[in-house]
Image (cartoon, rainbow, N blue to C red; front, top):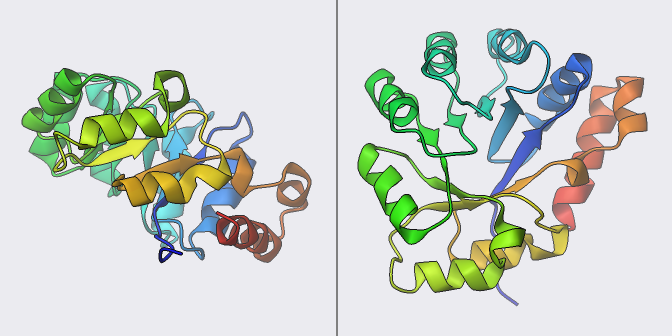
Amino acid sequence: MSEKINGVVGVIRTNEPETAYRLAKAWDSTSIIAIEITMTVPGALSIIEKLLDEGVTRLGGGTVRTVEQVKSLAKMGAAFAVSPHSDERVIKEGVRLGLPVTPGAMTPTEIVKVMQWGATSAKIFPIKALGGLDFIEAILEPLPELKLVVSGGVQPREVQSYLQAGCVGVCMGGALWDQAITDEGNIQEITAFANRALESM
C-alpha cells in the first residue's frame, strides 16, 4: 500500500457565517493543507479578516471573481485566492500583489494558459463531470509539470487516488463536518470530527 499523501483542501460553503467561522477555527488544528471560505458565505471577507487577526493559518478565499476581492484578500494577509473560472485580470492582480491564485480550468489549453498568466495551480472543476481520475491521468501524462487541484464531486474514498496520480490538492467540503456538531459550537468536537474524516480519506 502506498504511503498516505496529505493534500486535502477544506472548502467552506454555507449560508451561516457563524458556521464558517467555527469550521475554519477548528480546521486550523488539523492536517488540512488549506482552508477556503467561499465568497458566497455572507460576510465572507469580514470572517476571513477576523480569523486571520486571530492567527488562523492557511486561510484564503474561494469563488473569487473580481479584482476587488483579490485586493481585499491580499490587503488582509490571506494565504491564497481560488476562482471557479479563468480570469486573466484576477490572476495577474494576484501576481502583482503577491497573492497566490488558483483559477478554475477545464481543458489543457486553459490550464496551460492560466499557468502562463501566473497562477500557482489550476483547479479542475467540476472534476466529476469531466471524467474524474481518468481525466487527470490523461492530462498529466503529457503535461506532468502541471499543478492541479481537483474540485466538484470527489468522494472521500477517491482522495488518495487523485493525490497518487499527481494532484497537489483535493477539495473537500461536507465530508469534513457535521451540522449538528458545528451548531453546538464546541471547537474541539468540530476538530475531532474533521480529523476522523481525514483519517478515513
